Amino acid sequence: MEPVTLRGRAVRLEPLSLGHLDALCQVGLEQELWKWIPTAVTTEAEMRAYIAGALADQERGVALPFAIVDQPSGRAIGSTRYGNIDTTHRRLEIGWTWITSAFQRTVANTEAKLLLLGHAFETLGAMRVELKTDALNARSRAAILRLGAVEEGTFRRHMVTASGRVRDTVYFSIVDSEWPAVKARLTAWCG
Image 1 (cartoon, helix red, strand yellow):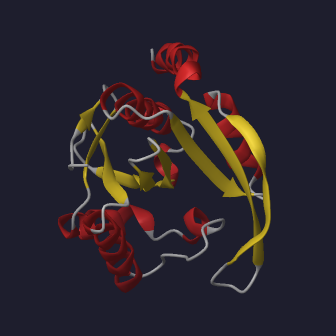
Image 2: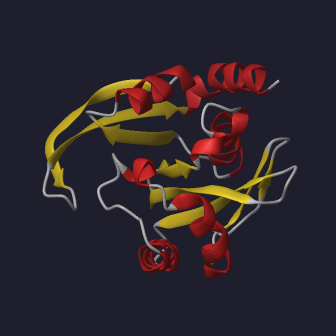
């Protein structure tokens, strides 16, 4: 799976690189952004490690990370990625998504998901796209359901976060037969 740039009207998803470090540090070191993420990113060194880890997973063929860029300004406003890529079984996960608070509750995240899902189903031939979130993150759970994903269940005591809290993780999916309805909904929302 090769890096690719995905373009919408509000956002552009471009291949993540260490060249995005300064821009992502300017918008992404807010503690609240990382509340539900297993490992917080609150310093430049942690952001560098976050990007390096994503690029290492890309090198291993299990991830494809993106910087989320605001189209009008050309500024990076967050990051997202395909992860847990399994080409044999034609499935992948969309996750590791964060968007600076100034762009939350805007079209940015919806359009990013539309671009990622469209590329996954229409170009990569995915049969299944998975999404997951912390069971305590009610806002994220509601947002994933609004996309049209189906909640599949909770992996209890799934992981230990950097703070030592044991996290339950809720899994969701969208399968290829559901994609046309999901696409219509997201396209309408993105106007």
